Image (cartoon, rainbow, N blue to C red):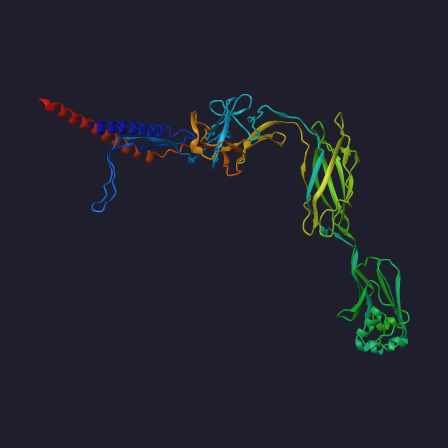
Length: 527
C-alpha cells in the first residue's frame, strides 16, 4: 500500500512537470522564434519480489516478479523544427529559411536566436529587442551609418561591354562591268577580225587583251571565247600571244549574251573597253557600264558621362566608325552641364582592333586614357577605358559603358538586406555600398542548446561548437527580409497533450485516495 501511494506521488509530480511544459508551449504560441518543448517519462527502478529461474528437467522456468516504484521525467527536449514565416513591414525584420541561428552579443558573451526582430539604435547598430548587437560574418557587429554622406569621387575607370556590328563596313565594289559584247555562238564562229579588250580594276594598271584575226578564227562559241579571255589560251590549249588571262577578275556571258567581267574589288574607277574593226556593228550599241557602290561605313554613337573630383558631371559623346575589316576608330567630345565643349588633352580618339573570331585584340588596339582639365579647382580628370569585353560580331551595335567608378556626393537614402545577409545601402547619387554581412551559426546537435530567456540560446558541451558562416553556405539557411519566424507550437497537439496529461494526473490522485482508504481500513482493524 505504501508503494502504491509513493508511485502515485511520482506520477503526480511527473505529470505536473509535463503540464508545466505544455502550459509554457501554449503561453508562447505567439512568441517569435520560440521552440516548443516535450516532456518524456521513464519508469523508476522496480523492487524484485521473486527472481527469474530457468527451466529444469521436470519443471519450466519462472519469470521474475517485480513491483514498480513509480516514474520520473527522463528529459525535456526542445524541438527545433522551423515555424511558419509571416511578412512584416520592417526591412530589419529577418527570418531564416532553413537551418541556423542569428548570432548576437551583449559585449561579453555570444548568444544564438531564431528571433529576427531586429532594429537600429541611434548609432546605427543592428540590435534585437533587448539591445544585443547582431554579429556579422567578420565577427564584428553590423553597423548601418544612417546619417552617412558619401563624398564625391572622380571617374578613373570605365568598362565597356557589348558588340559592334561586323556588317557595318563594306568595301567599295561594283560587282560587275558590262563590256557591251552581245554575241551568240553563231556570231562568234563567223567573227574573223581582231578584237581588243581593255580592263581596269578600280584605277589600277590597264589589262589589255588582243585577239588577232587568226586567233579569232579558232574560237567558235562563247565557251571558247571565255577560255581565251580568262586563261589566255586558244581552244587547243596554246597560249595566246598577247594575253595571260584576267588578273583579279572573271569573264562570263549573261542571259542576254552580254559579256560581263566581275571582280570582288571593283570600284568606281573600274572600266572595260572593247575595240576592233566594225565593233559597233558587230557588238551592238549596249553602253559600257559600272554597276557598283561607294565605300560604306556605318557609324555608331552613344552618350555617357564622367565625374571630376568635385562630383561635377561631364557628358561624353562617343562615335565609333569602322575604318576597315575588324578595325574601328572612335572619337569623343566632352561637354559640361551647360553644354560647353571641354578641351580634351588626350584620348579624344582611339582605335579598336578585333581578331578573326570577333574578339578584342588589345595588343594591336590604340586606347589612350581620356584626359582633360575641368574648370575651377578640381583635379585633372584621367580615365582609363577598358574594352576587353567588347566584341565585333554580325548583329546590332550595342556597345555601352557598363561601369564607371565616379560619382557625385550623396546621402544614405535606404538600405536592404538580401537573402545572403548582405546589408547594402543606396545613396541619393545612385551608388550602393555594402555595410556588412550577417552570420549564421549551426550546431551538430541543436537540441543540446540551452535556453537563456529572451528567445536566446547558448551553446553547451553537448550542442557542439558554433559553426559560423554566411547564409546559404554549408547547409545554412537563407534570409528573408521583412519577415519573422513564428512559434513552432502546434495548438491542436498541445491541447491533446493537455487533456491526456490532466487525465493522467487525475488518475494518480485516485491511486492516492484509494491507498489512503485502504490504510484507514487497516487502522480500523483494531476496533
